[in-house]
Length: 182
Image (tube, rainbow, N blue to C red):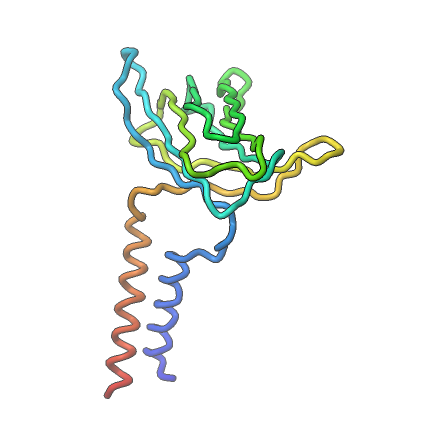
């Protein structure tokens, strides 16, 4: 294999791993952030719409999404999707402590057909972005077992870096194919 061909092959593989991450099969929580009409002067009202996939939630399992106390306040959960109990804890900058949105499955299996909605006041710059989440189970003996951790991802458009890597990979594969024909 020529050196140039090897470089193009590596570039192609790297671009594909950026688009198709290695954690396929792990829980995925995607969000759409919507800028809502502000109801209080000086308070920037937003809403996250979360879609959860790649996980079957049995009764007594759930997920928690964390809201950084520096940028979020006034969290309000939307209507509860079928088979879920929702809980919101407000961020507290005085402690400091992040707030959270928690969804606990109350049926077996809980439905993921409807999105989870959370409105909030955003004090950061630009649009709100990715957040930390945990998937957990409540064992019979008590406590909480964290079975997975991750970050939410935007469902809107990929980052420019991802598009660039995909483009480089495609160009590399095309160039390798042309060289092979010669």
